[in-house]
Image (cartoon, rainbow, N blue to C red; front, side):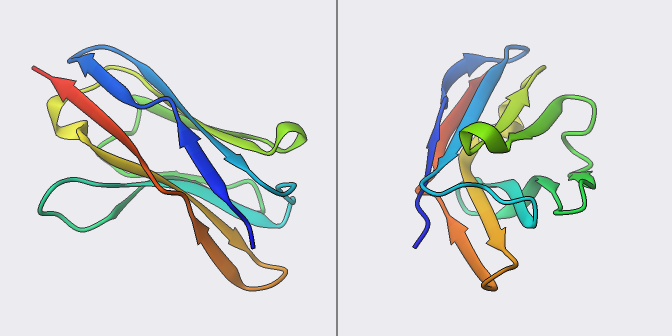
Length: 117
């Protein structure tokens, strides 16, 4: 069982920045896909950013140019740098890991991000 723990959420004014971190309880492997999702009140969970095992990075159109995802396998951590935040970015942000070796998907508990106007 893999545990993912997110941190770095909080309250920020529009235009501000936050950096989210997600630390895994086991080593993040090269063949793992990692990503960030978010869920706003009354809405479905949606992809924010994702890194495949092959290194391809995907972003939701709504965050392109503002958010940057990165992985550091040496410290078992995935980051999400969020700049130029907007009120519509307000949501609970979840870390996700897809372990291709065992075909298991893991989720963190989530961290709240609130952007005030």
